[in-house]
Length: 454
Image: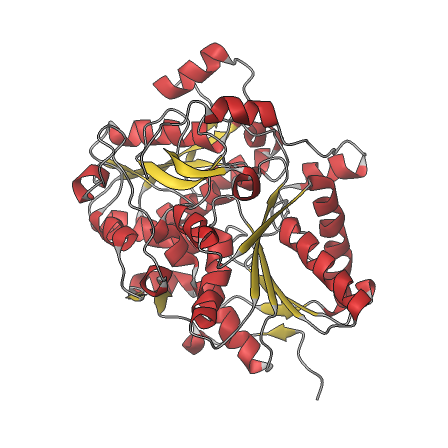
């Protein structure tokens, strides 16, 4: 009998717990600090933005957290998601490597983002919140939260980074289908937005700016809370259903990964795939190389400093220790809008500092070449973000062709690109260019990062 190309789990095999890697790390991550006192924040400091249930998850050291039944019921609309063996891509590359990808584009929003949007909407609704505000880059997180809010009767207000708002109008339409109100960021609706526009009227926006606007609105209304689609511990926690399923699916075909690659913007997709495998590595049961892949134009892990910084541009959030390019650095408007963040998950940054994962940066032309090859062989058109680890997987597979090694390579195809065809049009017209790492802009931004001991 031929080995399967699509490896499935049934509903009874879907994870019923999220995995919290903090409980297994050799050293705890650094604390989150109050921006005024530089002392560790407490639950009351975070209460204006998040419900207590999520604050508890943010600081938890429990290895596993049960997934409520109401969340599992919605997860069943698309979970468990399929794991594919990329046989046609392997043949095109002529490689002895075996390439697998976990496909999260089967969710209603077309990406991995509903894995955390649904829990965040659920916990907010349970505590009586009426409205959620958020930011979005490419629009995947915004559409996921709009979908989740529609399931729990919450209003949803989204600030979408201007570059994506202009170039990806149907992402806005998708959010509106699920009832969300969408604004281009920076906007005239907030003090943070007006300050940016006064200095830079043609600002392409950034995730940091959009976060400032969403946080400002949430903090001013007791019936509103803020939801973040990446970066924070509870967000990464919710995404671990991806890796837990992938572990079970690979076990069905008797394979274990030698190399795991995933794209990193804020860190949730990468963490969701890799953290369950990292648990197995820490326990001595597996030994994969685990590699973060980021855009060369916004290389926070490979070029940023590991230090305390704000998570937003206006400096409204607590200080978190992470790899950062400076909170008011505005990345070039590359088409992988979901990866245009000045910082990185503090938990993932900590894990990189511990030497448990690696990082590399790849320029966007190579990534789009990889995305097109993937689409022409595997049939799925990737969003502009997952071609980063696809490119890294292709690099690894080509090395196997040269050495004859039969490595097993695993990646996450975190979403489809059906709303991103303008980026592919630019690629085919030859208008897509590699953008240099803006050293001087980053130096200027880093000079304005707060100085915090530790």
